[in-house]
Length: 273
Image (tube, rainbow, N blue to C red):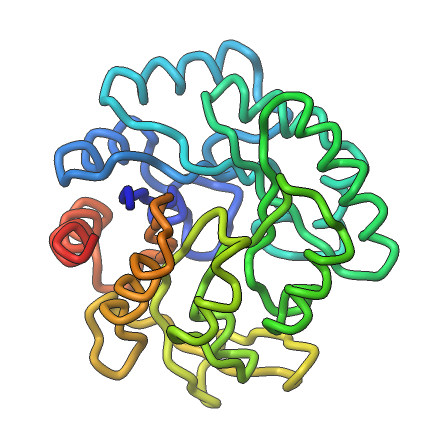
């Protein structure tokens, strides 16, 4: 496996479309800590970014030897609002951005039955360019449960359409997220995320799940013993033959600095992978 860092770590705590720390700082810190790639989001680059800006970021990352593990090409995808599925109806700009960044993986979102045909069409267009589409296990979507994800993948029925395994959303949705689930999803896992949470009904952070209603979650440090332990999960991914990216998809916590958080994440996860 290869270790990637989501640029989410440097986003403004209250706005996912604004980088509170410049990509130059994030890239330098990620490289120094030992990361191999960055997971790109709209806070740094999006489908409306200028060609010159995209080229400048690509040059920066190439200079540090960092690859782009996946592209999340607009803000609705990051926040999962009603516009998040628009990517499926206009996939070309997202593919263009991924190509310009040297990535072969684009994040998509599906909410309803009508999105299945759109996902097939988008997958076919992406396949012509050697690009895969991946849907994160995520509340409020067709990938909220493992059964739902597998059924949707079966119905889309495209070899370049798969899933981003992510245990925190599975936990919030009342699903098993351990080795059994990894084994079930394994043939379709294109990417893996890790963010650490614990369930907390008093938390102001709410996941609006379909299966359980509003679920309070609290983001906790990556090594918090009351959160999710990544050790067995990474071992299970290895046993299933997964050799792709594991992206640290953690937001910056109140007491942390970006540089220290990046370094701590690398020190924890590099030995595990």
